[in-house]
Length: 197
Ligand code: 5GP
Image 1 (tube, rainbow, N blue to C red):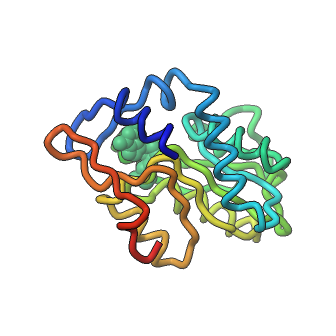
Image 2 (image 1 turned 30 degrees about the vertical axis):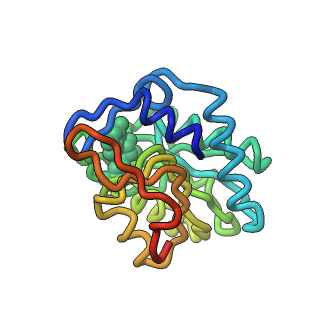
């Protein structure tokens, strides 16, 4: 995913040693061609997994989640962060602490859309401490469905999420792995440097 790394290098804004802003192509304005490539790559990586559903979380997971689902030929469901009057009926919920907003949100998905026979691929924009990812996995497990793995657009490998998910036996595929944001510089972890991935 050299195209993605180039975008991060060229357009990413380092807000601190732990936060990267990518508003120009992922979190506010969205680059559709990049999203299409991301969808193709996740679909290729998980092509043999008989995925029946993609699950993500609003709002920034929707673009990569949708493109992945399109490539796999399955529906995409996004967890809601706020209750809505239209989101009635039986809900699957989990509490997650947001790294960027520093608040706890109850996320929910209608039971109608994740069912016990589903094989679910979870997609998200960033992996930091793994709270969003674990919350989504909890929802899949509450539905009695199977988590096939995680597709992450940008993994910040210096935070504990990736280790946490892998230590629980989950398959994690991250398209860009960042080893450090220190000194105002994005340092990627190259494939050859990844151990136990
Ligand atoms: P986690 O739950 O893994 O701690 O954080 C993941 C969530 O927080 C992602 O869904 C993403 O929206 C947000 N996030 C975490 N770190 C960053 C970051 O450096 N930049 C941006 N833009 N979002 C982040």
